[in-house]
Image 1 (cartoon, rainbow, N blue to C red):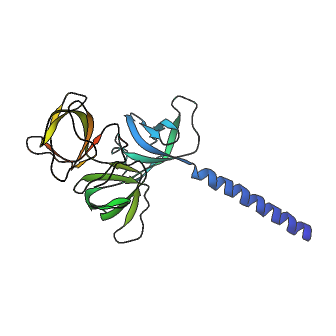
Image 2 (cartoon, rainbow, N blue to C red; image 1 turned 135 degrees about the horizontal axis):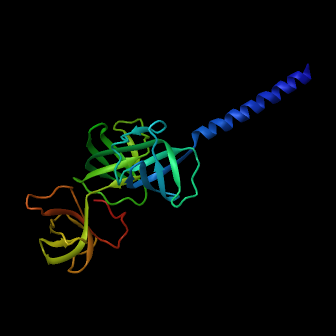
Amino acid sequence: MRKHKGFATLLLALCLLVSGAAAEGLQGATLQGLITALETDGFRMDDTLLGTVEVRLDAQLTAYEGIAARDRLAVGQYVYVLYDGILTRSMPPQVTARKVSCFALTGTVGAILENGCVVEGDAVLGTTVVHMAEGQPPVFTGMTVTAYYNGVLALSLPPQLTAVHLVVPVLEGTVSRTADAGFTLTDANGSATAITLTEVTALATLPADGVTVRVYYSGKAAADGAVTALGVQAATEDAAGARE
């Protein structure tokens, strides 16, 4: 009788081991990063660990989560891709997505916090506290931002999340025609924009003719195309500058 019980126990342990391994296999692996190019049957992304990866989408296999959808994927979106853990040996490697997830909110910065900001006006979440991971660009009150996150929201009022990627309105170019009230910014394509400085503009670097800078602004331009700078930063400085 003991022999039968011992065999049954061993069999049960083996079944649990196999089922556990199978469950782990079903979980697969996850890529995360920015979409860099759209393709006929999928997209390319810059995974945070592997670099460039080609993601194939299958009409029968691939599911979508958050704001992700087959016809709504776009360059610049930060996505999570669940796949079976198998990478082809091609260059770049390829995977077939089981699920593509994208979580984002868009709104206006209403207040600056020690490690983030309060974003107001998102169509779904309304007012949200956004904590910012390392390496994010500076934010300023009145700026329109899009914050990508991993889908996890803290159960609080207002809800809270941690941004893994933050998109802010920014122009980059070379300074010319410097004056007290502003300067002209010419980008790499030769397009010129009049930049207005005010008493609240945060100047991490002083604009001077010939210097390449980043200009952070609200996301809106005046009728004549001029932009009022919320902050000015040397293009060579770390993107994660001071927040105002």
